Length: 258
Image (cartoon, rainbow, N blue to C red):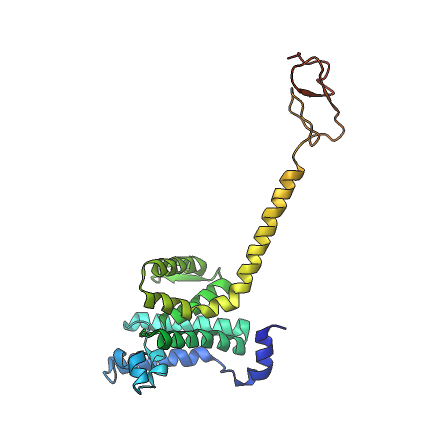
C-alpha cells in the first residue's frame, strides 16, 4: 500500500469533490472584480512583506488572479483548466487529486514566504496540472489557435523546454517559483521516471552482454565465417602460412598459402 493510499484511508472523507470547479470559480470572481475595478491584481497578489504586515488574505486571494485578462482567451483557458482538473480527478480519485493540487499550492506559498518573492498568479501551479494531464493522456488533441489540431504531449514538451530555458536564464525568484510549484509533479511521477531509467539501464546492460556473447573465438581468414555462423564448422591453423592464420574446414586445404 502506497503512502497516498494510507493517507486516503485516514483523511479521504475530507477531500473536496470537484475541486477544479471551485478553482475555476475563484479565477472567474477575480477576473470580474478586476474588470469592475472592485480590486486590483496587486491587491490580490501574495506579497510576503504585506502578508507578514497583517494582510493575511493574500495567502488565498492570489489564487483568484486570472491567468489572462482577455475575455475570450480567459473563457477558453478556464474551460481547458476545468477539463484537465476533472480528468485528473476521474483518473486518480478525489483525494489524490486534492493532494496533488494542494502540494503544489503549499509549495508555492511556502516558497514565496520563506524566500521572500511575490507570487502574481497560479500559472506555474496550473501548468503542473497540465503536465500531469499530458503525461496521463498524451494523445489528447487540442486546436492551437482554434484551428490547428496538435497532440497535448507536444505542447507539454514545448512547455518543459521553456521551463528549462527559464531555469537557466531566469532570476532566482522565478527559478524557485517554478520548482516549488511543480514539486507535486515529481512526487507523483518521479517513481515512473526512476523505473523507466532502471529499465533502460537493464536494456543497455543486456545489449552489452549480448554483444559479448556474440563475439567469436574462431574466424576463417578466407571467408570470414565464425563459429557463430555455423556451430558445426571446424577451424584449423595452417602451419605453412605465416602468422596465426585460421581457416574453416572448407578452405583449410584449398587456400593459397601466405
